[in-house]
Length: 461
Image 1 (tube, rainbow, N blue to C red):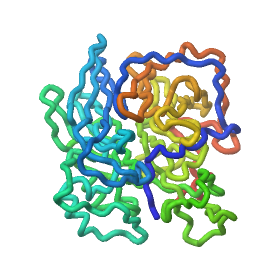
Image 2 (image 1 turned 180 degrees about the vertical axis):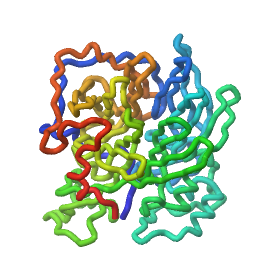
Image 3 (image 1 turned 60 degrees about the vertical axis):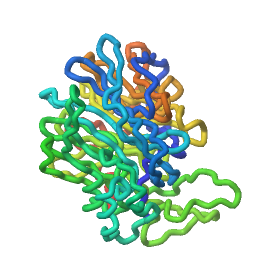
Image 4 (image 1 turned 30 degrees about the horizontal axis):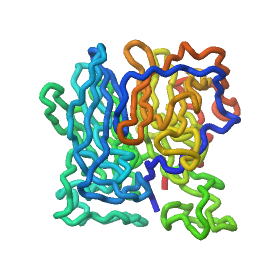
């Protein structure tokens, strides 16, 4: 089984205490905009206007089971948009009635307009998500999917829908250049088509473009469904797909199950040599999907990718990869939980956003306590916003032209999302914890750290 698990179900604990940074005073959060449904990536335009991805809440159209929701139905509708906030505070929605998929009937975990970014020339680009088998997206891919030779071990739980049941969601799982005046879309790249034709990680055929960044004339896109980081020229040429490795977890902790219940077959992948199980029949090792959810370009020009990790969402095991010119992902940092985004500030500090620091069964999916961690160039980790200090189900982080940090907060649920400014100056007496020298040493962002130590545990099949 090779299940891509982008769902925020059964969220695990945050960084293990032995590595954990501490903050003794709370930062304050200032709300810039709220009322966003399944809020995703935030960015600033050349004039300081804030743009926030609003994937929407789907609708009552064509439904399909999705790995993003543990196979609960996600249904199509035209409820997505981009929320625009000008520097003087005026708000409006653009690209309204955009195609959207979301879990029903809750409207949670939407996929649609993920993020809008600008290149150095001021041109705008839009990334859209999908969170499912691309053969269910439109009639053309439905036909391709029917002819696709599935790889060995393919988990087929969401076969193509009959053509007369396929709702047009053909603008999902794509990268566009957009005209903000006319709202015209010019397609650059189709991740759904690429996944169904190439399947870069040789796993299950699923796509969910989740986050992207632009540097020069190249877009860098992370696909949490395909477990792939893409490099795509902004004219659609020069496509490079870089699969991210699974992680071997010893003695994984599984969520408690009701009496008599079992984990669905195929949901947990075990090493091929076979391993003993616990008295309860659970594996003592598991190969966990990477599920990349955030990408950014570092001061050294390399791509840094954060992962969420799939079921059973092991605590303190999420990694950050560095991908250089050779396109080989190497573990740069580890010891995080449920990363949903990351970025560098103007001082070269890496900001790492954790969706949640507690498992999902400890609370409501829409309001799980998240955190924001700063990693200095020497490797020292400082918690800028700790769990319980106001971040809930946090889903995106960006540094504005003013040097301030902005976080997409409450990223799950209808009309609950917001963007908040993190007032770091309000944090006093922060206790920082350097990386243990026995594992990572003193890192710099131009030198790879920790990759060799962990390489034996993260090879792809």
